[in-house]
Figure 1: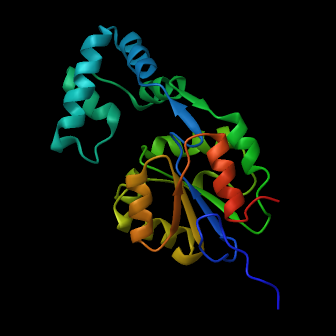
Figure 2 (figure 1 turned 30 degrees about the vertical axis):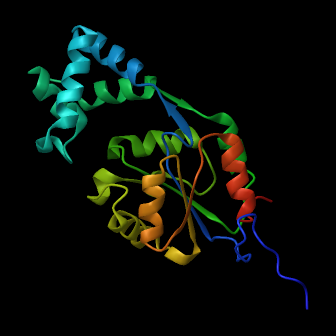
Figure 3 (figure 1 turned 60 degrees about the vertical axis):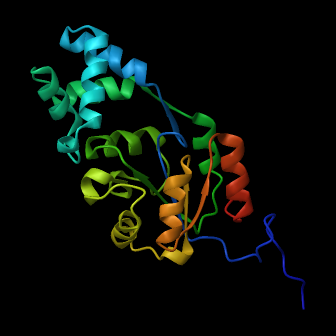
Length: 211
């Protein structure tokens, strides 16, 4: 009988996950907040400091929870801001990590892929288009806006898996924030953190997901 293999943390080896669920910002892409502020200020013809202050007020207000960012920012500034204007600014502030995208192209063929983000639903299509990975279309980019729940709420992960028809015990979730990893584990998923290509590669290799 062959000896059991062990992962580096001492846990007995397990079958590779059948579903890989990834965060976007901080794992697959970098988000530069100052660029977002600058882009929005330019579009609105406002001082960047005024836009930054409005963003901070909106983020701190319970009344904006679940609201669309272009709507609550427009309300704070008392100025109309369209969804496309916000999207252009958000995309300008987002830089895809091409090395991470290349790494995902090395996944085992029997592992499905999906994204779970606290971003608005408006970003689902652009995220899928930017990643351009087999089997990952906009329907598999799940957002808190569409789910009606946000990470790290364990119910957010449960609802995501219902939509993806995945099982918690065979799903690996990766995020750059440990608070979200804790939420995923509370929902029964395998979960770990990754902050750059090297750490993402380590996690994928540890769970046997790379070809």
